[in-house]
Length: 470
Image (tube, rainbow, N blue to C red):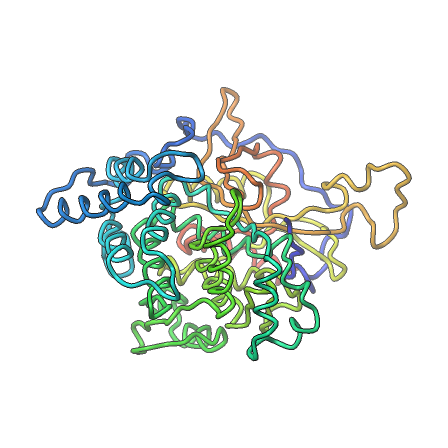
């Protein structure tokens, strides 16, 4: 479900409502191989990231054997419910792809080591080790199974929640708030997908921590990953009310946790999961990221957040998304807001032309990174103004922004004429596969996107200078 983009409020109407993006020829880029369904490495990583695809030490062989045996001996978790492929077979695929022995994690632990920890140390609140292990492998094997679809809340579980003394009064008065039909976790789910897609060891490390008895994962973050100005980094940490340990002016260690309601949701999914709904892993990962972005205000039972950056009770806004990405990547991200939006949330123009936006995305993809974008739909682009009997009113104007959503661009390809098609993942499309959008279709809808600072710093400075001069 697409969500309203709260971050488009209160922007200046600089160029007027009639300005339109001009069609230009797509930039010619290097031809890439298509992304093959079931492939474990997106093609924008091919020949860029060195991988280790064979077990080498006695310890690695022993750990691998223990994990495979546990999966094969489990009646409930030996076969994936998503695609009926044996989980042990997926382990073998992870090994051959290089994901299993990757050590791209915050503490340099490997995916294999973190999977072993999930299996061999006690999980929290009755969660089953092998089920969490299998779900983690499933997500690493095919990250597109990650979804933001909450699933239903059984009536007997609702009644148990309502009988608790700890239940919020708003939920007690309106139990239907727990019936989340279209979630606002698209930012969190997109970041979760990115972690599984590009940082498998870190993804497994987070799952291990969040499902452990400590119910937390510790994230060591360099201050210069938040801002090149250390006092600004300190301010960000304070503004986002981050729970810190071992702070100094080089780095800080954050304690990242889901909210209590996430563990209730996790237990519901443990017993009542249906295909296409969030896994236990999805629930806890998304809650943690929502908590981090919303200054600890997110409630998993209702999918409602508070916090100081948005009056919209659902989702995360651009500033929060950028903070989350910087923390997860341990690398400063900078967000470009491409669209100009007036105080009434009418799309009135663009900060960059088509070619520049396309170049930002492609240059970043060529470094092996994903690009998480926020796009918006207007009455016109959603097709609302084409309906019979349409009347143009201020609230129904063609350029009025009516909703927005976050998706992840993982790669691209070009045709013989140089036209670009982006390969994307959408956590809210009910598909466990990647989808394609032409650049011509997608770019005009992109409201914002975050990139490593080095990729766009000069262009951001130019945009800011033009805004001041306008």
